[in-house]
Length: 140
Picture 1 (cartoon, one colour):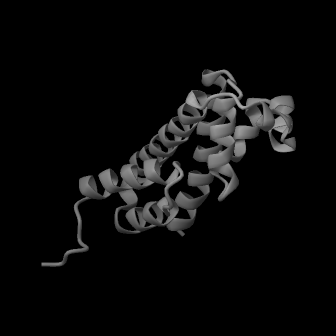
Picture 2 (spheres, rainbow, N blue to C red; picture 1 turned 60 degrees about the horizontal axis):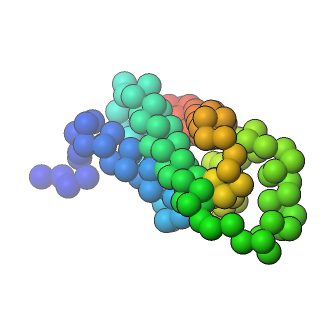
């Protein structure tokens, strides 16, 4: 029995979990999981792309919610990064996929009380574009 020969359903479930956890402050490599799933199951392209995007977007919104529930500290209000996010608004969350800064952007957007529907839209769009590139690369 090959322990690494998972079914397509189990692989997609693992992809969703990796994508969700990868968008929180926990470390993760959901791009590698998406790549591996599509290498083994290229016929699952749209399902894998959708689940990776959905999981990662929900993880980003979880980070947004964590920021929303943080108390307001006056000292943080003057940080230049927060001032830029406040000035540019939720479109900055197109970069929510980026390593190191993406999670912080989502938390900061929640802390600044940016409107959640706009944040959801920009987070999802940025993550879908990034996973689209990874998915295409897996099929080459």
